[in-house]
Length: 336
Length: 219
Image (cartoon, rainbow over all chains, first blue to last red):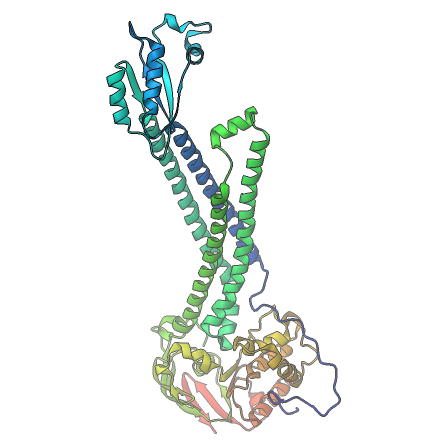
C-alpha cells in the first residue's frame, strides 16, 4: 500500500496530471427533503392558514364593530313632543339653532313631515297626515366624534327654552354596542389565542417528530467532532427553510382568501348573496393592518419552528453528552 | 498520550462491566483490544472516545484529566481521536467524498482547502473511482474503508476501530489491516477492537485482552 498522502502537499506534483475528479456541489448535511419534512411543511401550512384566517376574522369583526359604533355616536337626536299651543315648526327651528350654538356640533337637520311620515309608515300605513296625530318631531344633529358637545349643558338649555324638548345622545345604544363589540372581539381574541397555542404545540411536536427521524445525523456529527452550535445551526437552517415554505403557503392562501372574498363582495354589491354575507360577516376588507398581521404570523411561525428545532437539537446533544455519557443513567441500555 | 488508572464502570446499579483498568496507550503504538463478546470492548472504546464517563478511577487524555474538562471542550478533544464503528455510521444521503470530508466541514474549513486531500485519501484507501457514490450502493468493505477514511481525514493522533473487519471477507480484512499498519507507521496510534484471532495472528502487536471486565496486556 502506498504512503498516506501528506496533508496540504500537492500530490504527485511531478507526475503527469490526470484531469481532476469532479465532485458534485456539497449536499446539505441535513437532507433537504424527506417524509417528515414534507409532513411538517403541510402541518405548518395548515396551521398558519387557520391562524391567519382567525386573525383576519377578528380584525374584520373589530373594524365592523368600530364602524357601527362610529356611525351611531356621530349623531344625536332632539325630540319635541307636541302639546297644545306649541308652534312645532318654530320649536324645531329654535331647537336646531340652539344645538348649533354648542361647540362640537357640525350640522343640524329637521326631520320634515314627509320623512317623519315615512318613518311611521310601517306602523300607521301610507297617506298619513301627521298634523292630525300627536307625533313627536325630530331634529338630527351631527357632532364631532372626537370632541363632542357638552350634552348635559345642551340638555339643560333645551329644557329651559323648549320644555317639550328632550335630547337623546344614543348613549344607551352606543354603550350596548360597545359592550357587544368588545365581547365579540374578546371571543375572537380567545379563539385566536387557542388557534395560536394549538399551532405552537403542533409545530413543536411536528418539529420534534421530524428531528427524531434525523437523530442519526446528530449522532454522526457529534462523533466527528462537531460542536453543539454547529449541529444546531445546521438543523436550524433546515427547519427555517421548511417553516418559511409552509407558513408562506398557508399565509398566502389566507391572504388570497380575504382578497377574493373582498373582490367578490365589491363585484356583487346590492345582491341578496352579498348583503347576506355582509350582514353575517361584515366587510371582507382586511386593510393594511390585517395583511401586516398575516406577515407577522408567518414570521412568528417560522421563528417558532426554528427555535423549537434548535432547542430540540441542543437537548439531543445534551442527552448524548450528559445522559449517555453517564453510566449511572444509561442503566445498561448501551451495548458493551 | 492516554492513561487509565484503576478505572471501573458499571451501568446503573448493575455489576461492574470494567474493573480496575490501569494501562497506557503510548504515541504511535499499535494494539489489539480483544476478548469474548460482552467482555466490555465497546464500552472501553467509548471511554477512550470520551463519550462515556467512568464510574471510578482516573482517565487522562492528551495529558488532561477528563473529569475536570468542561463538556464544551470535548468536541475539540474528540477531533484528536478518529473512530471507526462496526456499523460504519455513514450518512446515506451524502456521497463517499462528502462523508469523508464531513469532519473537515464541521470544523468550518473551506472546501477548496481540503478537496484534493479528500480525493487523495479516497484513492489511498482504494475508492478513487467511487467518490461520487452514495453509501447504499457500496459493498461492506467499501463502506468500512469510507468509515476509515473519514476517521483519518483530519490526521487524528489515535485511531479507534471497533470490529473493523467484522463485515468483510478475509482478503479485505488483510487489506484493511495493512492500511492500519501503514497509518501506524506514519505516527498514528491504533487500537483495534476485535475477536478475530486470525487477524491478530497476522502481526506481532500488543494485545489487550478483556475478560469479565478485567484487562490483561501482552506486550
